[in-house]
Image (cartoon, rainbow, N blue to C red; front, side, top):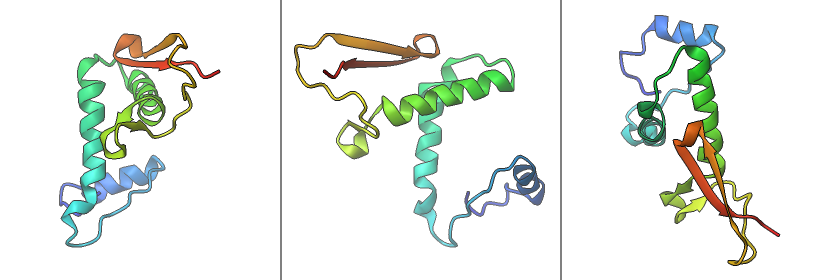
Length: 115
């Protein structure tokens, strides 16, 4: 987190009680927080803004499903549209296309099954 005054002592105490260890950005490093901000924008636009959540349990499930999709199934522009964790490497373009959906079809992944 950056050094904004909105992160009060009470907020940091709450994080401590919940077992979250915040990492503070260095002083005068405005671009240091860019990766976290990009992730927050991605999860909001691709997942959370499209859902109606009923309590903490449904929020946690949505975040867990999105994290599995983000790390294993979503292409990343910063990596030349490759996957972070390529588990499904097709060996032939003749293999049938498989489909996996998460969160009722909000997140979709298409792949060819490896031989």
